[in-house]
Amino acid sequence: MHNLVENLKENQAVMLETLKQIVEKESPTRDKELADELATYIAGLFEKLTSGEASIIQNEIFGNHVRGEFGDGEEQILLLAHYDTVWQKGDINEKIPFKIQGDIAYGPGVFDMKGGIVQGLYALQALKETNAPLNKKVVFLCTSDEELGSPSSQKLIEEEAKKSKYVLVLEPAISKQGALKTARKGVGIFKLNIKGRAAHAGVEPEKGISAILELSKQVTYLHELTDYSKGTTVNVGKITGGTTVNVIAAEAEADIDLRVKTKAEFDRIIPIIKNLKPSMAGVKVRVAGGINRPPFERTDQVISLFNMAKKVAQENLGFKLEEKETGGGSDGNFTAPFAPTLDGLGAVGDGAHALNEHIIISQMPKRSALLALMIKELAN
Ligand SMILES: [Zn+2]
Image (tube, rainbow, N blue to C red; front, side, top):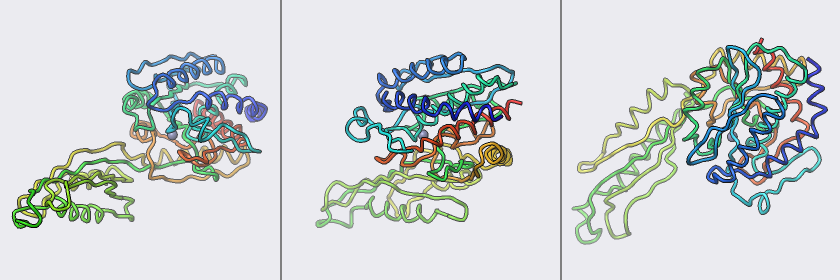
């Protein structure tokens, strides 16, 4: 066991150098050319570090996905990552250069989630170099479009999850305390369209039906669906409507974000949103949309997976691991319905998507060791 920990500790400088390489290969979700370059690089790195086999899964719109296989066995453990970032080409020069200050490394995507990719790959290398006996194969799936909600990778992720005994997600841990994520809310996205009737606001206002007035009533109703005791929130995050000040608005629209902790809440709330009724005569109300990501629920299996991680951290690495739930979604939401999933096993740091995005360098070998020890335990 300690072999693994030592191996990774000794590799801290190499891991940091690899992180620099990966971060300097910028990979905005919508820049296929850049993304493809990084995909190829990661596939090569996977083969070099793990002696496993990596394949490139072609993708027409976004960057290609990478799928690596390490070890063998009938059953598999899925190691899930994404290499795209919310940053744009050139941000590494202009906004957030890669830099090291003491124990902190800054750069676009270091925390979300290139640090996690590096930790995952070196964990596999450590398992290889210490000849850890594994009776399951590890599939490393690194996708290209998580930051957009995984339009081109969702199916692939679900397919791999269905084949997996366990899923370990390399998304960042929760801020500096480094808690793992054992529950994520499900996300629903809807568009509300309201049609009223236009009329001159001064000459014959009585002939108009204001879509904006109707919208305001619907927005109030929608927000009242929020129930913090159940963990359910409804937010109208954007509204548009009307044409100009002296016209009764004929049309208005709203974008609605729904978050729930459980599928049962989805089943309760979605029909309410889908069947919104007009409050005024002559108004037409239409709702489009639905589930964007299912909830990642904190099931008994998830809890026992976390307890295993906690024990491993305490006994082998000497730190106390915490767990938390989050309202934000990840690809863990797609795997959770199919296999016990533990999320937040990536980098420790802070500032995802923000100018202060950074990771704590000395945590890299520790978290990598946690991951390696978890895999060793689960593949037993
Ligand atoms: Zn992420």
